[in-house]
Image (cartoon, rainbow, N blue to C red; front, top):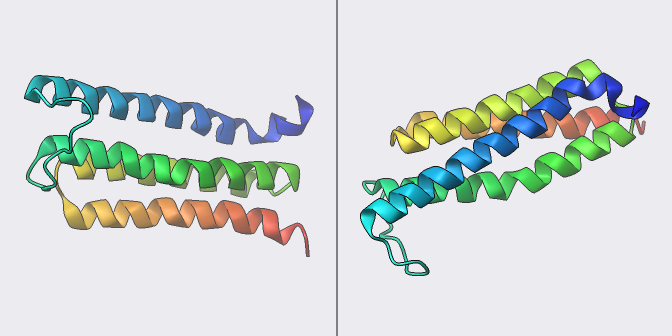
Length: 134
């Protein structure tokens, strides 16, 4: 579609984000199976527990992906500056990827920094759409 042609990088980021979510799901599931976790039971809530960290990594990704998609659609439909949107989408993805890796490695400060990077990407996408309305 011609409308989305200029946003090809953002569309690629959507696909890469989906792949990252799939990896997170598989990691959490494999770890759960290996640890003998009974499905539906509460995971021990400790950052020392890799199963907890892998479950939280995907849960946190799920908490932001809806915002990411909504903001991208807002930017696309507002005909926002494609370079800005594409860069912002990449910033979001790099932040989410870093968050996942740092959560797995239990590097709390770096995990928080990566979360902040992803938030900057989200806010930037939103602002690129908002600017077109004024």
